[in-house]
View 1 (tube, helix red, strand yellow):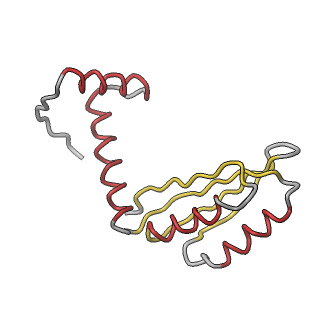
View 2: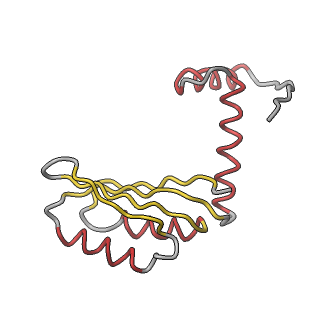
Length: 133
């Protein structure tokens, strides 16, 4: 894909914010950061419009809480239409990380994530979505 050049005018304070963003996230230059931000914005708009997206839901919990694993299984049963894969990893003797790979309409993936991350006893939960097209 070829790149096109164009000029952008920014206030001093906004330019400082952009330069700090470039430094903080290790972009090669301002153009790369702006491309990333535009793509991110387009992706997030697709989530709001319920386009088909893909993602992962990651939850961390104490593995000795067997009722949590059972609740995860029960919830996933109702979302087999969007779940691609589900796996768990034992991080140490106490913590388990459960990862669910998903693809479907954004609202459905968000709904699944909300149900999983609000299980009593979940230490951390996060849904990350990306464009599927």
